[in-house]
Amino acid sequence: MTRAFLPALLALWASVAQGEPAHAAKHVLYLEFARGGARAADSVCRAGEAPPFRCGRAGCERALLAEVKRLYADFDVDVVLTPPAGPHLTVVISSAGGEWCNPDYGPRVRGMAPLNCAGDARWGSTAYVFACRDVQACAVRIAQESAHLVGLEHTADPEDVMYPLETGHKPRFQSHEMATLNPRCGKASQDSHALLSERLGVRGAHTR
Ligand SMILES: [Zn+2]
Image 1: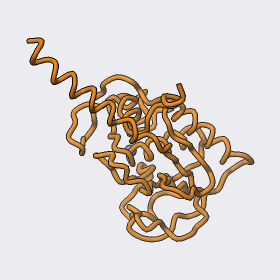
Image 2: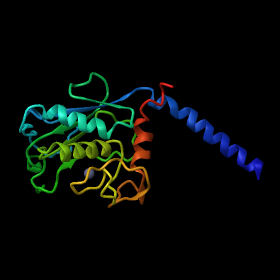
Image 3: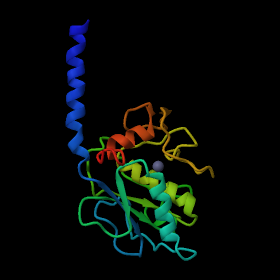
Image 4: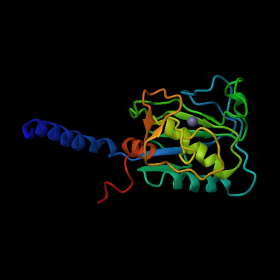
């Protein structure tokens, strides 16, 4: 039994050791406040341009940044407001509804992102957030759409950022197995915190 066990342990060790360099480059999430400019080349929106982001009060861009950073605090990702030179994820944020993106979208569609099931480092993917007005609700939406870009699916836990409906709760990326909703990546459950840790790396893990 011990002999059968050993190769499995060695294989595990090798995969962990080889996994390290994947996180050597820190990931970057760029929050792009729509100014009415041209849509991204890899857009999931059918047509048009994202209508401008209009903040109701001074400083809400910074407040949104702070909230998104808080939600991503455990993970090895920089959240920035200026366009990065290197590979990055983008979330385009608009105050308007999603009708400009797809005429079929009603007010319940609050964002759209390509779901990158493999999490295969296709940096440069772009997600959209619509109807961004309330800082807290919009920050959760931004976190959810950007997490779709690295392969996270919707879950059935209202306390999880990946829960598809807005509850008024203050969700986090929950660290336990939760049922997925209408899964498209072939998994019946997801630990959102663990999967993000795997895809983005853990903050501070490489500074010890
Ligand atoms: Zn979603």
